[in-house]
Amino acid sequence: MDNPTHPKTSRRTFLHSSTLAATAGVLTSHLAVPSPISARTNDNTLRLGLIGCGGRGTGAAANALQADPNVELAAMADLFDNKIQSSLTLLREKAPDKVKVDPQKCFTGFDAYQKMMETDVDVVILATPPGFRAEQLHAAVQAGKHSFVEITIAIDAPGVRSALESAQLADEKGLAIVSGFCWRYNQALRAAAEQIRQGAIGDIRAVYATFYRGDLGHKYHGPRPEGISDLEWQIRDWYSHLWLSGDVTILLSGGHSVDKMSWWLDDKMPISAVATGSQVFPSGGNTFDNGFVAYEYANGIFGFLGCRSQAGCYTENGDHIIGTTGICTIGRAAKPVIMGKNPWRYKGPTNNMYQAEHDELFASIRSGKPINDGHRMARTTLMAVMGRMAAYTGQQITWNQAMNSQERLTHENLNWDTKITPRPLAVPGLTKFL
Image 1 (cartoon, one colour):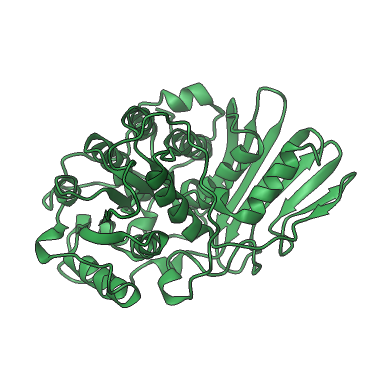
Image 2 (cartoon, rainbow, N blue to C red; image 1 turned 90 degrees about the vertical axis):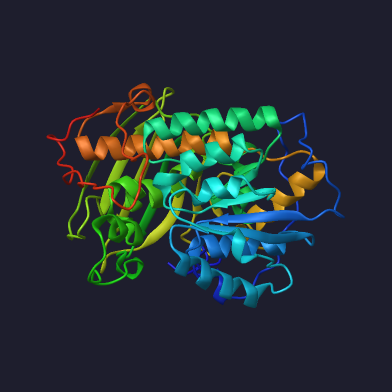
């Protein structure tokens, strides 16, 4: 679908489009004690480090460099040097006066993020494949760095538990964690959320969220080159590999939708989930390309998530919030609409939510009231993980089961000689919950 509320310009293509003006408005923080970095005035330069130099990381860095007049890119880290060099080229074109990365501050290899934490950067962007992010957030908070973390924060329950611990430590240290769950930074959706809070649709009874997209063929790198190891190929082409992505369709795309679902429902978490899903079109990997999850809440409300990544099918990225006196629809029209007893249509300006995330991150650091999205981001991630667990096993999965799951999808102590045997594609009814 093509409309201003759900912009056609993706994060990955941000560098190749003009930057829209972003609104200010710093989110209210729950933190009381600012860190020394947070207390800096605008006369001090905030030094930025980028971890994960692909398209999304490069786009996020471009946003960050425009978010504050006194920020500079000081260090970069990635497994592959060619990623760093291509990112540097694009960022120097976009913000030549703010890219000040010496060659010795370009780190490669599996320990590149650790080397980054030993530098004097103030803020890090974590944009590696999701399987690496929980560990990297832990390292960032331990090192006293503010963080922007792309979705999702983890791909399994152990990672979520680690992220919750990191968020708590960030509270104690007065560090910012801003989430790549970007829709909460969209001005039109914030207005819709305020209408819902004021009772415009009555009591919410159900939410139907969609992320029906085309296939992900444009994300893949083509045929496997000769001489490349299994591990390198999986990492370079990570979308279809469960241990790296956690499942792009249900966890990443669906994660955006369930974060909004949680927003509409005051961030109350569901008690259980039942789901269906499968891989219809072989991808060479072990993730699903469709799923449908029914979340049940303690008060009898249901939330429904439909997600699909298949060519030739109906596409929609939207939300239908159904209340006792009205329905709020987001994504079907150009701007949010309420139909029913209290009709309403958003008529205000639109903003670039990708830019707003960074504007508000840096403004919160400058003000000494750093935003911490970490707790909410971890819970939303678990909500999406729970949906994937239900789809992959074919079982009803409770919130407590998901939170306490011992299934670990990630791998530790990786090096280029590590051999990873992909687990079989899940078969609902046969795949076991762990």
